[in-house]
Length: 158
Image 1 (spheres, rainbow, N blue to C red):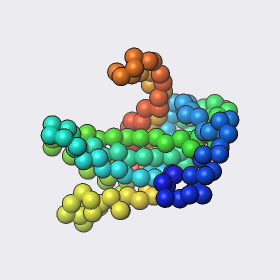
Image 2: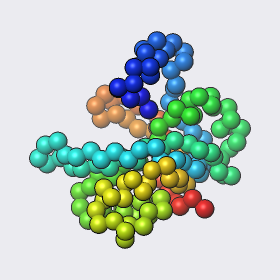
Image 3: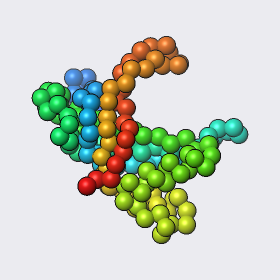
């Protein structure tokens, strides 16, 4: 991830050829082992806004139910640069329970934490299994159609 204070990365990014910019890829449907790279907590900016917790993952490897030929046909650098995200919008108790259950699947013992932000460091670098499938969508802002990787059905890494 680019650090704004890292001038070497900035210069490298600034001088990168367009052909070398990683492309978003759509993964073949199936289960993947993912590594958690970052947890980002977006606090509400205005009254009426909802707090959001964002989990940002990278692909470690596909599981047995993924079409190996289709996966290997994807450019490796694009798969490595792919940021997969799962967000939790915290509107009420059910949303907090879903977030808590997700952290438990990452192996966090939440009984040892009195607050959510104490659990976030325990998540660092953890791995999880998720089913990923292509999902078609239409942007509410632009009206353009697209396809994205949809993460669902998370399970603890065996």
